[in-house]
Amino acid sequence: MKKALALTATLLILALAPYVLSNPRKPSTIVFALGGIESCDSTGTTVNEFNVGDPVYVKGSGLEPGGTYYIYIVRDYSDWITSETHISDLYIVEGPITVDVNAGGYIENQPVLIWESASPGYYDVWADSQTDGEIDFYDECDTIDNLDVGNAGFFVVSEMLIIAIPVLFAYLLIIVSLKRRNIFHKQETRQDQK
Image 1: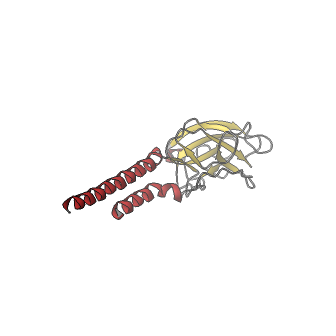
Image 2: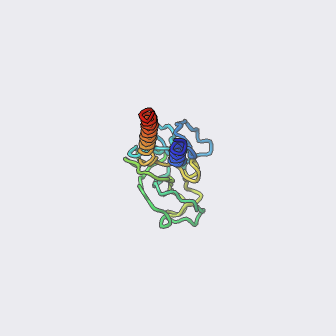
Image 3: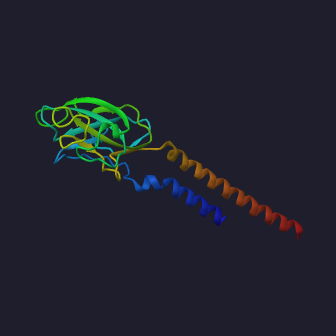
């Protein structure tokens, strides 16, 4: 019985570890002091953890006033280097979505929908300035959202995690019930032998 409980607890911990070690879903409103781009929900609340199928929006501030940007969602990329990272180095998931920036440096009509139905994984958001700097290269005129969750801008919770918890709980209940039945069966056998 103790071994079954220990095994179940270990499996549950392993299933939950990626979720627990990442930032839990705690929406917050972020004021862009230095500017940048962030993943968010449809209300503009910063979100760094999405569920599978959720829509992903972006918001931005401190951008080139009156400028135009192409926004991409890319698989998490850990080697962003100014003037060296090229679009061909990235695995583009969504984009480009073209956004204009108002005179105050905010994306017009934000938040902007960039991904209608998110898939599991870790992702960065890249805003490539089409007004200044080098197009298709990450440079000082661009901005990225890539350090909110470990080395990624945001992540999408795997369906396997959502399924794993009830399955492990069911497994635990089955083991406990089998152990109880076995204990009662042994007691009945002893009583019959007397």
